[in-house]
Length: 122
Image 1 (cartoon, rainbow, N blue to C red):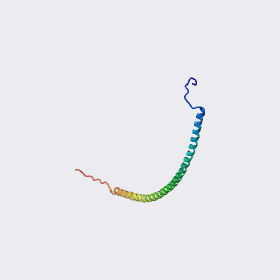
Image 2: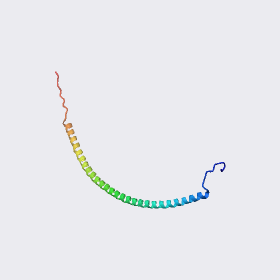
Image 3: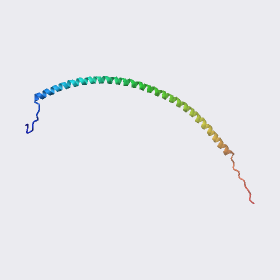
């Protein structure tokens, strides 16, 4: 008993040190070797995957950029043509239509006259 507390059964100090040292040496060596080997293999795979993904991504981005450039060029050309056609039609149609409407209205105004007649009532 130490300080009125029950002392459990324990290994003596030399036995405990020997067990821990033996176990520690085996675990430390095994773990370090195993971990290094696993990390080396994993690193090699990661480098291969990264290189493949980067190469594939660059190719896909270039293809996408080419497609976007083609789409933009096509869209710009198509829009320019549509806008040119539409602008010409609107301009000429509006001018002719407006002139015709004014001419019709002016003719009606010019030709209409008010006639008053007096009737005698006797």
